Picture 1 (cartoon, rainbow, N blue to C red):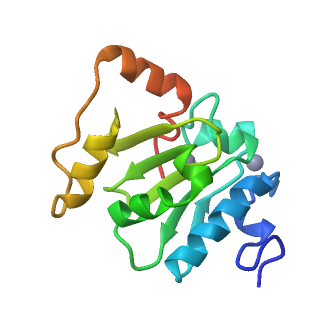
Picture 2 (cartoon, protein in one colour):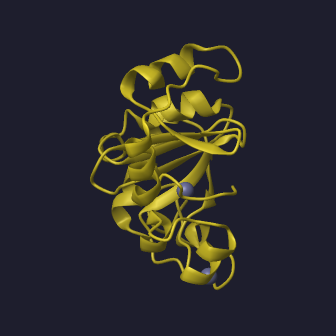
Length: 168
Ligand SMILES: [Zn+2]
Ligand SMILES: [Zn+2]
């Protein structure tokens, strides 16, 4: 039992350096929805981050983790591609941010209220459009065919928080 929703507790979102957990309930409710769809445990690797901790992990200056609107999660037993597809089924994430970290084995989800999609591959962030997204989860194993966008999009991606964390 969680103290925020059926399966989530505030402590799961706490910043590891200071224990602050100013988490947005829209995020927690969307995660509960995802958890109900998955039917298996969802682990929060990173939830709320204070400014100091965000700097230490190389997060974007305007990372959604600073606002308590983002979580990096692992859904038990699913590949990151399947986690990504599952997140697309939750309205708040579908209309928010979803980041795929296939080589680190997790996804980022946030409730920014605008659509953003990216993947981190070989240490680089690439924007995902819809068709590229479909290609990555039909590919077997390590995704190869993610379409990178032009320079303008790359720049927008970084300032929007696509460059959300240099590390897991
Ligand atoms: Zn902290
Ligand atoms: Zn994140």
